[in-house]
Image (cartoon, rainbow, N blue to C red):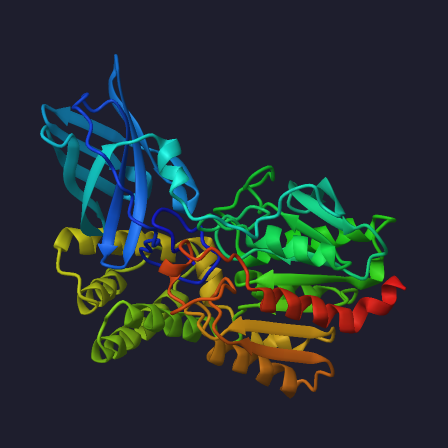
Length: 483
């Protein structure tokens, strides 16, 4: 679930460094002007994985200061904790993401040539270029909705009184009668109402499609994100259940929303939360689960890591060894009392995993272990790791649609769709559909490999066949409501 270069920000179940593929930026050499100003570079994590970064440096009366942007990831203004300039040499640290950079100015080209380290070390050169010019090189997103819309759009606030927070969101309603209403549930990490990722706005695209087809849609900023109040970092999936339940209560209190056709549509962790909400309520009209976990989370997580590491070139023998160590690590973590840090034995296992995966730099290994130890100790992860979706799935009685892409590497389709299907069959559920969509990744984009590194370079935000499948499925059950 923590998968961006910086933060737990992508809607997926993955921990580690992820680098977004984008076309390399071309930069013309400029005369040396000192280090003050904006600089752009492309971090080459591999021959196929490239990530544009922009740094902003300024010399003040108190010394040097700076910040870093990753436009492809929507991470802007990450503050540098320390900046040092010594003649032609530049060094900076970014404590919040445990990263550092060391480089030297090349007077001939005007470029700063150096090394960026965040768990691993990569060559990274910077040349002068404005932030606007760097962002202009990002791929287009042709599906992102642009006003005017053939439906109404309203800014709303949902109060979760039990948690003393207010969630900000957008409610879209079709021009005519409402067939049904969907509450969208974001994936893991702090997400805004559009579930912004790699320059894409999947929930904006999904809400636009559904509202054009007669459905009302409520999408929300997560607690502590955007215009919503509350604290995200201390919350668990159980807390998010309360937030979504409050959203259903809000819709049921509106006279313009038919209360008997309100359902939930969740992506990734959101697809896990939807059945949790349904267990507490008997007034939901449907559940749609997109790339949702269907098996014990430890098994899902280990399968995910195997897929991702295998795609990055880790050998089958090493993958098997990592799987074995992972089982030990997660068993140890699940036995820890709440709030207890990882013991030395578990940290040693994490070091062993790093070495088996091919890491050799001792400092890099220690940085990665420290980052994982912090994440594995978070309230969210401790709750998540112990989660088994089967009991929640077995109690569902509303119509259920579960979709996943055949190329999904985060929530592997065969493993998790089989788990969902088995749970629903075992409970003799009367109306469910479990479908694997060929050629789609975790975001339901049409992809080549399904690798996370494809997300930013693919112009498509969500494949039409996925959008159409959802609206058609809803039409089959609720079209009569609007007549």
